[in-house]
Length: 598
Image (tube, rainbow, N blue to C red; front, side, top):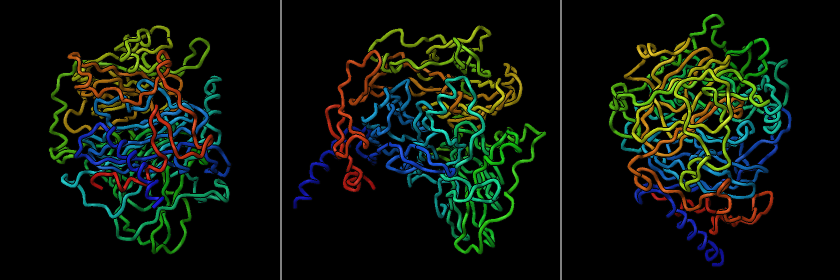
C-alpha cells in the first residue's frame, strides 16, 4: 500500500511531462531519463575517463517510430557544460531543441534540462552526441533508429534482426587534453586506434594488438538476414568498413532509402550513417572479421589504427584467424572513393515516412533562390591562434545563443554578413552567419582546399547531394549535376582538392548549424549558421514558440532561475529540480504506464 501511494506522485509527474510535448494527442510519446557522467573504461587497454549515459558507453539506442514524440531529460553529471545534439533529426520548425550553441544555452554541471521534439515525417538511421568542446572524442554518443509506421511499405523484406555499429578513431588522451593540443596550435596526430561499439580490436595480429583488449562480438544465426546500422562517430578519420566473406547491401542512408546496391567495402566518413542488409550465407567454418580501417593515410604508419570486431555464427567451428580482408587497392586512383559516393542513388520508386515516392518532390525542377560557395582552407593563424575558416571567417560562438538573442531583441550578438563566395581578404574571427528566408531554395557548394577529407552537416535538414568532383567548382559545374535521384541526406563528404554541391529547401524557420563533423577543424572554427526567417511573422505559426524550460545565459543570464546542483556526483537524491518544477529520476520505470500506443 505504501509503495503504491509513493508511486502515485511519480505517475502524476510523468503525465504532466507528457503534456509538455509539442504534439497531437494521437502521436505516441516516449520518455527517457539520462544521467550523463564520466566512467572509467579501457577500450585500448589503458584506463581513461569516458563519457557515458546511464553508465553505458556507447549510450543507449533511441528506438522510435515516425511521428513519435520524444522527451529526454538530461542530467549533466560532468564537470563542464553539456549539450546533446540529435544528428539528422529534422527538428521541424523547432530549432529550440537542436542542442547546439546557436540555439541553446549549455546545461551547467549538476543541472538538468529536458529536450522535447518530434521525429516528424522521417525514418532512418541517425545518432546523437555532445557537440561542445571535443566531448564526442570521449564518448556520449548513441544511436537513433526511426522505424516506419506499419502503414508504410519498406522496399525490402523485414530483416531478422537489427544491429547498430559505432565505428570511429580514438585517442587514449582525454578530450580535455585534445583541446589543449589544438589550443596550443598543434596537430592531434595519429589516433591510437579505431573502436567498434566502444571496444578495441580483436587480436588478429599478436604484434599489433596487445593481449587483454576487450573486443565486440556480433552474434548471428546462419541463414538469417540482419540490418546493420553503421555510424562513424570518430574524431576526424574516414574509415572503410568491410565484413569478411559477406556482401553488404546498402539500403538506406540518413533517412533516405537508396537503390539496393552490394558492396564488399564502403568508405564511411566522419559523421555519416548507413544501413546495410547482410545475409548470413557462409559456411561458418570459423568466425569472420568485421573491419574498420583508416583511409587516405600512410598504411605503413597506421597499421595499428584498425578496428576489428567478430561476426560469430551460432554454429561457428572456430575463431577467426589469418589476415584481415584487404582494403580498397586505390593508391593510384583517387576517384575510387568518389565514384563509390556518386553511385549511391535515392530509391525514387518507394516512400519513406509517407506513402508517396521519395522522388516525387522533383527537386531538380525548382528554381534556386540563393547560392553559397563555402570554401575551407588549411588552418591559418589569426591573432596568434591557429584557426580554421569557411570563406575566410573562423566562427566564434557568442555567449548568447543566436536564436535567443533574436527573440529578446539583443543586437550585436552576430552579423548577417557571411559572404556568398570565398574572399581573398585576410581571415577573421567572428560570429558571421548566412541570412535567408523561409521557403527559399538554396544551392550550397562545399569547396575543400585542405589536404584532408571534410564532412559537412546541416542541422534540422536533409539536402540533396547533386554533384561532386575534383578541382575548383565553377558555374559550368552545374552541367554535371544529378537532378533526379541524388541521395537526400544530412552529412556529405568533400574530398581534398574537390567540391560537393547540395540543394536545400528551407522549410523550417529558425537558426540552423552548418559545420564540419571533423572535431578538430570544427573546434577551431569551421562552421556557421543559416538564419531562416518567415517574413510574414510566423512565430507560433511556422515556428514553434520557445520552450517553457528555456535556459538563459550570456546577455540574458539574469533571467535564469538557479538550480541546486544535483548531478550524480553531487547527490543521490532521485528528485531532479528543473526551473521551478520537478522531473523524477525514476520516470523511466513508469514509461509503460504513460506511453501511448506502445
